Image (tube, rainbow, N blue to C red; front, side):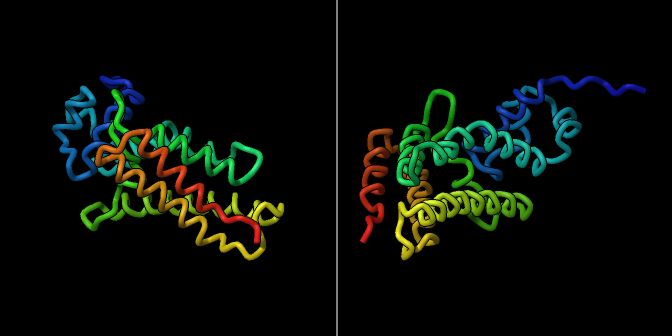
Amino acid sequence: MAGRPREFDREAALEAAMLLFWRRGFAGASMNDLCEAMGVRSPSLYAAFESKEALYLAAFEHYLATEGQAVWDKLAEGATARAGVENLLIKTAETLPKSRTAPAGCMVALGAVSDEWPATIAREVRKVRLELLDNLRTRFDAAVASGELTGATDVDALSRFYLSVIQGMTIQARDGATQAELRGAAKAAMAAWPGKV
């Protein structure tokens, strides 16, 4: 027997859920708020996503594939690691401030930073943040191998520094920092790029 067709478009529903979770966090987005934002009734939401946690994880994956990928792809652009990091920071500065369509900040940096989050979500968000750190390490390891950075470069410290800059820019964007102000922070961070000794 065929099931009843769903009453909503899954991608549109995920987009709406993503924006609400991004704006309010997991606890701040009630099931009523989610149903209203997604334009569905509770039974349809549960039939499609099973639970609020599963919906958050699906919305988070949607964020990574849409918003996050466009920013982090910039790390691979540029002939050098320095150019890649600069591209990443500039794109971050352009993307983080609130726009007509998106809340300020980064869903990855803002998500699951307190104990109130369900463990499954906290683990997934932490895993993604560690993957971002590894992306920077990989780019910096290649820069050491090519001679762009010296063999004495502390790749782990450099990776943590630039990820911390991005995470800090997220908080500042949430507090109202403009693109120009965040570009200034990006420029200052690039001034800290290690030179050859």
